[in-house]
Image (tube, rainbow over all chains, first blue to last red; front, side, top):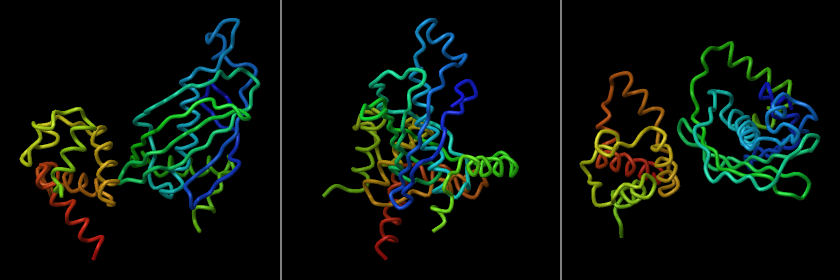
Amino acid sequence: MRLEYFQMLDRFVEVKADERWIKTESRVPMESPVFEGHFPGYPLMPGVLLIENMAQTCGWLVSAITGFSGLPVLAGVKEAKIRGAVFPGMDISTEGKIVHDGSGFAIADGKISSGDTAIADARLTYRIIPYPSPEFQNTMVTWAKQLNFPLQEFKK
Amino acid sequence: MSTTFDKVADIIAETCDIPRDTITPESHAIDDLKIDSLDFLDIAFAIDKAFGIKLPLEQWTQKINDGQATTEQYFVLKNLCARIDELIAAKGA
């Protein structure tokens, strides 16, 4: 995780392509400029970044099921609940499940936990827009491979 | 048994908090009911679920943008419902 660069995921740990489900894991860094302001002397992971963590986890899944044919951009967050606090050094797991694969949009449920403790959950809506360029599309596919995203699971 | 229009109107009323009695078959979802594209995604989700179909929104948008169709053909509710009925029939064929 590099919060200041919005790199919210460390690795993909499990995927069930048939169930359109995925799990990622991340460790919250001990230090980040984000914590200098949120909050001075009491570093606490901002809730919006937990939502971003779910959005990225589910976003990769949407990319995969659509064969990287378009860029999923976050369009809606519903029923978001921040149930627990996340501090520097904590490990979090994030599950994402596609609820609906529409025409030009997708809806997914995200859920974060740390051990047995529920941290956050939300329903996320994505618009799937054309990539701005073929180069950007290639960049996303390359990025997925660098993160060890199991692309082959979605080509079966 | 409720008609396609009744179900769609109920979905729109509930999703967009629009009084049900103001929604008619002649209503244009965008021009009359002022439903924006993001809210229409919620409506499309609910319609897809309710009827077991997948509204081809991308195809419709492309046709409108290319000048091959008008928004009225897809977003006046009686026309939208006709499209839904076609998709249901195609699914069962």
